[in-house]
Length: 356
Image (cartoon, rainbow, N blue to C red; front, side, top):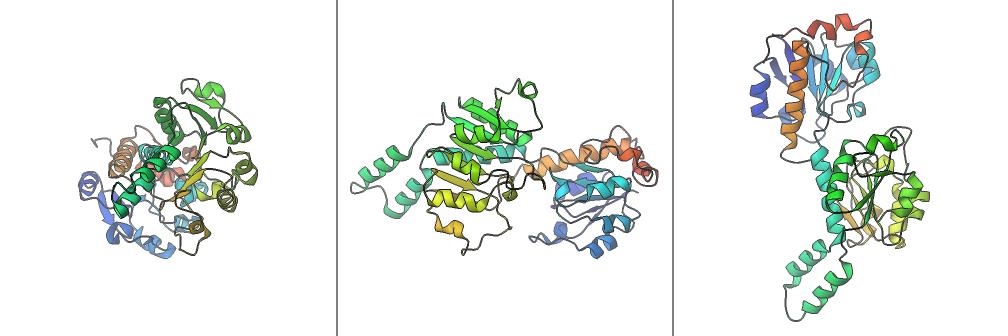
């Protein structure tokens, strides 16, 4: 029976589903569920012996691992951006298709981002904290009213600028359009005709920075777009504008953001992603007052439903590959043309035509 190593998040339900079509072997994070409990290169090579398929989340799959795992024929990734931990170039050259669970976080990220916008538009956090500390009394009633009056603004009619107009950006635009916001987007890979049905206007990055009341960073991080939203763009923002990064920390100049917030040159910001996957209290982000900065722990993509999304898409990818129907959500386009494909992926493609 075809064997699959599974190190992504564990689910008893999905183990039962996958076990109907492949032999499942669990290891790493899937077993221990400890943050950053990912397998080393040597451990991966050892675990992958005899395994045809690898269903992975964050373990680093290097060229070394791929070259030393001769049984491996297919990689399934739960991630929208598998290039962050998988050497896709090496996988393609070695004839190993990498199929991802594209869109698993789209709803979650877009909803979370819009939720941040709503909390930045209305002082919910401040009012909740004050009432919990002081109650709602005759003595503070007027103060609470003033907080609400002076810090509340409607999203209606405001302009949202979205940097990166992929799946997450398009979903966020739908929510903004529902609130009658104007939507601008910057994406150098798109033309206006590509978004004709989206009620969105494509603009240059500096124009987006100048015109937007809210700016959301949702681009895919690459080596070419590091700090794409930097000192120049922050200096162009409106004084009453707000900034949100639920994409990747490398897309912005974090120090420049801190500077404009500390100098009150923009109204506020919400940050979910940081240069390192931690944020010690010594970080200068904590020097910025709470009413100007919302901090969350890289959690925009999480929801109870994400597990269902990532594994239902992954299961569909796997079944279609085994049936020989298609190589769906292929992150290694052209892998079939690799001389090694016949010894790797091709040996699995179409192998389970009776799978349902």
